[in-house]
Structures are given as C-alpha cells and as structure tokens.
Image (cartoon, rainbow, N blue to C red; front, side, top):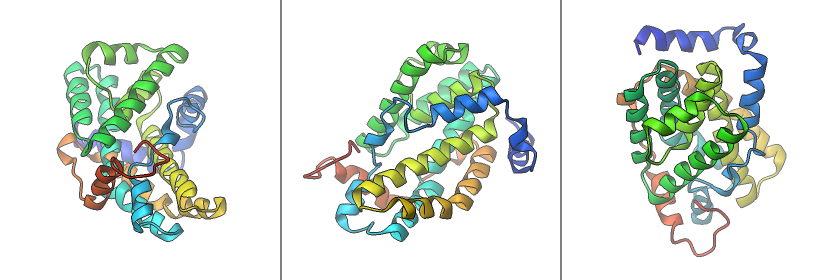
Length: 247
C-alpha cells in the first residue's frame, strides 16, 4: 500500500462529506458489530484497568481519561488500529500473503497472556457470530489462508472489508468502541457515574480522531508500544485476588 493511498484514506475521513459517502447498509452493519449488545463478550474484559484501579493508578474520571488516552495513543489502541487498517487493505486487495502476515503478527504482538487471551477470544467470538449472521467471502478467506488464532481487530477489519465498508469510518468506529469499552470498565470499577463517563468519552474525541489518522497512514513497521504500566497491570491482573473481569 503506497503512502499516497494511506494519506488519501486519511484525507477522505477528514472531509466534511465523508459521512455521506458511507453506504447506509454498511453503516448499519458497523453499528451492530461494534454495539455492546453484539455477542462477543467485550464487556467482560478491562485490559488491565481492574488492577490499575485496585493499585490506585486510576481513582476518578480524570485519571481514567489519562490512562485510556495513553493506552490509545501509545499502546494497544494505535496498534489495534494499525492491524485493523492493514487487514482491511489486504482483504480488499485480495493479498493472501499480507492477510497472513498481519494476522500472524497481531496474534503474536500481545504483551501478556491475558491480553493475548482477550484479543483472540474476542476475535474468535466475532468470527463465529458474524460468519453465521453476516456471512461474506472475506471471512471465509481469512480462515482459509490463516488457521491460527485471530486477533479481534483482524476479525473486524476483515468483516468490514468483506461487506464493502470504507476503511476510514470503520477504523474510527472500531477505536471509538474500544475506548467506550474501557470507559465502561471504569464505570463499574471506580465506580463512576454515567454522566462523568460521557465526559471522559467526549474528552477523548480529539485523541481518537488523531489515532485514526495515524492508523490510516501507518504500516506494520510502525507498530510500537510505550505503555509499560498498562502492560504491568495486565500481567498482574492474572494473580489479582478478587476480580470482576477476565483481563
């Protein structure tokens, strides 16, 4: 994928007419797939936030926002956005080699056992439900060329490509849903009021958009992470005495 094409994707989503170019049926599917009601079980994972609350790293809406913003822009968020984008492009371009490379790296890139379990369990659940309810050739192709564990952004990215959903709004929706799920964990753990949770989501709007643009312009070589505290939280959650979440 050329740099010009990646920049074109980014510019497309920045334009004021972008939302009007998304087919209605594709938008309908995206909203369903990323809804908390879609039966993949995302609500049962906190990505280490549970340990961060118990340890005192997260105590209120402000510290939750800070934690999520860093994780989004310098850790799992941006990396999942890159995996999503690269999968979408590989499927759209019918590039089996790129599909396998992206799927393999996404499954191996998780820094902890729980993070690997989370992304591959969500990926498997998404594929199982979507192949029955919303079948498409792209999902069949993914599971034909790659027989290993499928990370969540790879599964959703492939489905979006297979159903003709443009990349830019798809990855934007995916990263917004990711942040919403992290906030939902904070609501239950801190605990946090629902109004405060929406303030946190609003405060993250600019960071989500910036991360979307980065994910659209990035390549697999741009994958990186500097969220050491979040990785520690994920690892220590495995032995946390009392737990509400699976990660």
